[in-house]
Image (cartoon, rainbow, N blue to C red; front, side, top):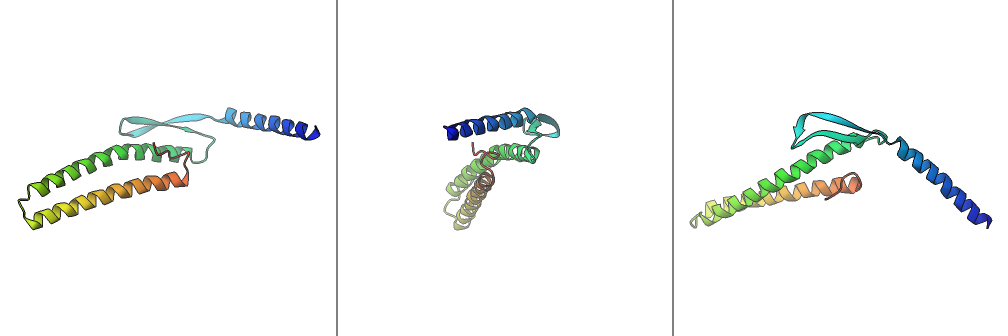
Length: 128
């Protein structure tokens, strides 16, 4: 019975400290001088040491996901059309294959960069 009282008292004390910490959580907003995509402000928590940096990196990465995916899709289609229209010219076909390989490699490197950020801190850098 004494053990149960200690556990209940410990949980009550913990809940007070957790509640106090969340009460101290204050968010601030910083207006960006240069908008990133359609985002003109970044909101962050002041009680987290690197919250502003994390939010800034997330904002840039979210914008770059759209840009990189669009450019990769355009380049893959362009190089596919170049290969078809090469007319059997081995030089043009190999150049288009090389550009396509470079495009896919760049896309893979961008995805790996996101995975590295996620591995560093999964809560700060969600993959979705």
